[in-house]
Length: 115
Image (cartoon, rainbow, N blue to C red; front, side):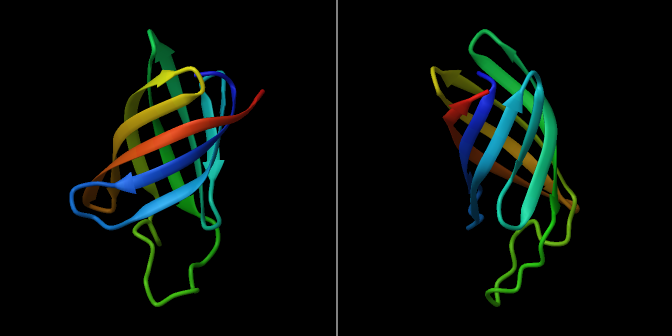
């Protein structure tokens, strides 16, 4: 994974109907990202075309636009992930712990600009 800003597109698995899109900054093992309601911080390691890491997601803005509530709303969410990358794209799979519930996801990342 190259240092830079990536678009990230997340789809929950296991029958959970939830998704998220945002941006994520990767730089020398540190990860920062967010969307209109949540921000994420974490770290990662890279080796042989694969990468893995851990992150923490927190809500920064209340969600009141629809009667529905985002899956992560009101929780500090911890996540572990691993995946592969080729050139400027990556695919990762991971699990987020939301309170006492775990949810699997798939995410794709595309490099927008290098650092």
